[in-house]
Length: 117
Image (cartoon, rainbow, N blue to C red; front, side, top):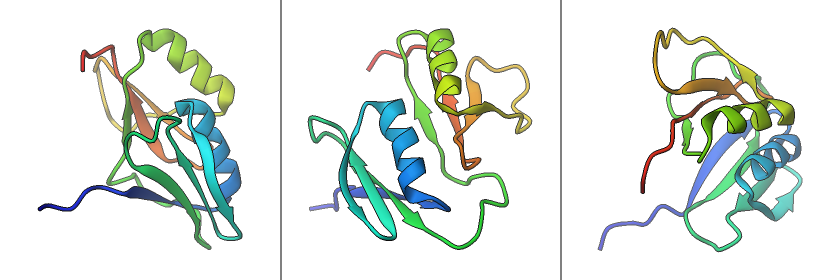
């Protein structure tokens, strides 16, 4: 039997603050808080948890792994996420249908146009 994805770990300078941003962005809730890490999970326990773990250094280069969000309304979701603290970033994406944002610690993520599951 193959392994199941249990959690995704994101390095964070301030795990609590970053977990708060992503919990709000995704509609997740805090699963647990430790001194050096905070985990969030979907309210219905679907999918992996996201764990924000403390690291001493700030992010320095483009992410090799990133989240892609699938909203019903891309324009409204980009506006909501920027109100939460996300920022538009240019990583050389050119003319594409998705929007690239960065979370409060600079981790890039994409907001896609609506895709059917």
